Picture 1 (cartoon, one colour):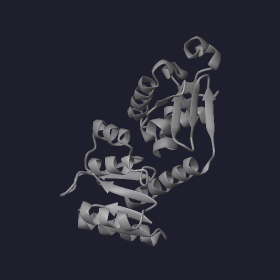
Picture 2 (picture 1 turned 135 degrees about the vertical axis):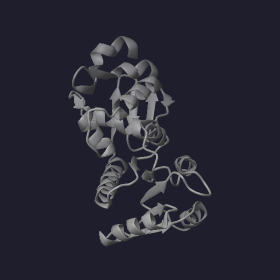
Picture 3 (picture 1 turned 120 degrees about the vertical axis):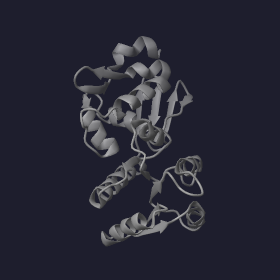
Length: 232
């Protein structure tokens, strides 16, 4: 089940019709009140959320979803006319799983929905953890501990760090990271990956150096021996 919160009737009806045609059950809501009423009765598997709504801002709704234990892991894709990089980063850092700007193609939307659903199933179903010196990462619990002290990351930052650890020893290009985490191609000017790497390093504090830049290529997890002095 997919929920769509969109106040534009034509967009809402087109998206719902298209999703239902692909065999995906979807329900649309024109305002936050009816959306929350439905959430109290049944939780969806994914939410498509407009940002500019008449009764409650989409980012405010996203924040509430991420603060609740019952809804914090439900994938959310933002649908909005706001297309600046700043707006995208704000939404992604607030916990959105993807960000689609209007106008958009229905086939692209469906592809992005499927991509986010696949990634969500991967992270939620696998029992997996990583260790790096005194740094412990639990994929299942969505938890990071540094010397037993918890580090809080956004959903995208956490996914990015896990992806780098999944490919420990290899260098990932920006294009590979964008396709696997955000579901779209690198256009040569997109700074999404670089911005998230920068904030990820800052939040990791003394462990920030584990995310190594390979000039002209991309990013990797640094060899443990190069950081032993920092981690002990």
